[in-house]
Image 1 (cartoon, rainbow, N blue to C red):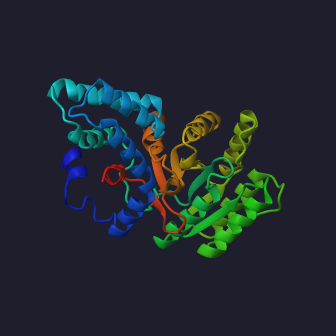
Image 2: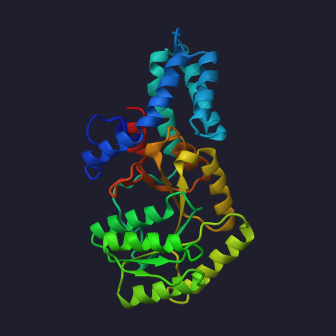
Image 3: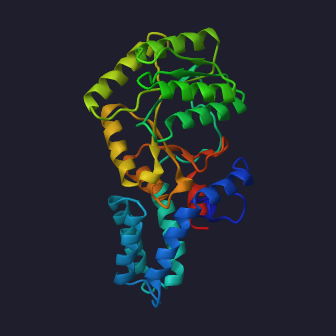
Length: 326
C-alpha cells in the first residue's frame, strides 16, 4: 500500500494501534489543532484560491505553531510547487494539501512507524539511557515506559543515576513502586556511573530484559555533561559491552522552540539515538513534533499526550498526521 493510500485510507490503518489510543491521541492534540485551524480559517477568509498572501499567512501560522522555520519553508515550497502545477488551487483544498505534504515530509525518515512498546534488538538486557533537562517529564516518562514494557511481559530494572537531586531519586522510587519493578539507587551525591554499574550488574543477575537508566538533567556546562555521560557509558560497558543500546532524549513539547535548543545542546553533548516529546496535551505547540522529526533526523519514538499512566504513546507518524488534521 502506498504512503498516501495508507495514511488516508478510511480503513483502520493498523489494528495494533487501538481505537482507545487513537482517541487519546485526538484528545491530546486538541489544543494544537484548535489553535492551528482557527488561525488557518482567518488566513483564508474571503479567499477563493491559494495565492501569495495565503501562503505568507500560512508560513506565519506554521512558525507560530513551532513547526520551526526550516521545516516551515520546506512545507511552503512543497505547497508552492503544488500551486504551480495545479494552476488553480482552492482554499477549501488547503487542509488536505497541508496534510499530504506534511505526511510526505515525515515519510522521508524511516521512523515513526511503530505501534507497540517493543525493544528493537535481541540483546539482553537492552539498556536505555535517558537524558533531558530537569522539568521536561524525564522521570515520569521513564515510569510510564517501565509500565508499558512490563505490560508487554518484559522484566524491567530502573537505575536512579540522577544523583544530584534527592527529588529525582525519590520520584523514580515512587514510579518503581507504582509499576512494581525493581530499582537500584544510592544516596544523593553518589557517583552516577557507580549507580549505573550497580544497576546493570543487578539486571544481569536477575536476567532482566530491559534496563532504564535515569541521568542528571543539567545543561549549564556542556563539557561537564558530556564528560559525565561519557563516563556513565564507559562504566556500563564493563558489565554490558555494547551498552547503552539507545540514548533517549526527553523534550517538553510545550516549550516550543526551547525544545529545539535543548535538542541541539544534547545532541552535541552525547549521541542521542531517539526522542520522546512530552506534555503535548497541555500546549498548542504540537507542531514542534513535526519540526523536530524533520530537522534532527533522530527518530521521535514516544509522545506524551496526557497525565495518565497510559498516556505515553509510541509515535506513529501516520496516526499523528491523521489526528492533527482530522
